[in-house]
Image (cartoon, rainbow, N blue to C red):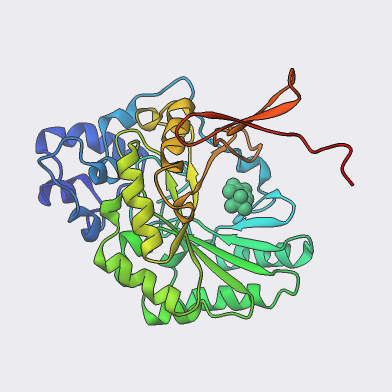
Length: 348
Ligand SMILES: *Cc1c(COP(=O)(O)O)cnc(C)c1O
């Protein structure tokens, strides 16, 4: 486990000449790379997609005009510490603000990785009380930080507390632990997730190389316990902005019983401009996947609108209305257009 620039130099992951610059990066944004992720990096490849995600880079110190310190407007929607309530029927619960690895493109990079990171017990109690008082909350999304870094004892207490709130129907965890620290997905952790309510786990994975045998085993422990596992990925320039890379990632996930849920357009987090790509490029990638891989492999390509206006799908629409002829024009995966009729007004 590397948690400082000195650790990364000792592990042979960064060149000693870069120490001064990278120390400045590490002062601003937390750094951690697990041995599992370090083991996937080819230090000889300057464009290594795993290194790009986890190893700090001088590019993070370059401010871009579009950077936002609260990229998706969580602060304005946070009624109390540990809760974000943007949509009426679901809340985010953030019991912990540390992660096993610090992704260089993280949209919460200014909030995470400080201190031991646990939401203090009194604040956690107030967060549970908020959920219990808001009967419109149908789903609780436990995120962070990474909630799978909680001990099985704390995780079990959290699940049981939410399970006991009558109007909460679904408990959803978002985590990178099955990828970044797969051995932490123990039998005790899996048992801690047992509930009467539906419990879902969403794993974050961005490159097919992250789908290691150890990760597959970790996911298997969850799915064998009857927990549906979904995935989310972030579309990142230089990491996975290539149809064959996305194809291998999505096929690999589905083949281990993980249903791709979202492909996120990158957020405007500070010091992450080098990961951003144009929405048109993202739409071309998603369109290329459409004809190429099973429907089971298709995530929804989404943008979280800066400022807190919510997530919207960015998938290119295959259908457009032809006002002149009163019909629809539909484009197939090969790019050919077809006419689709409007409903017959005289029918029925
Ligand atoms: C992303 C997000 C959710 C969950 O959205 P889904 O579309 O249901 O996955 C909920 N609350 C906030 C504040 C979010 O950012």
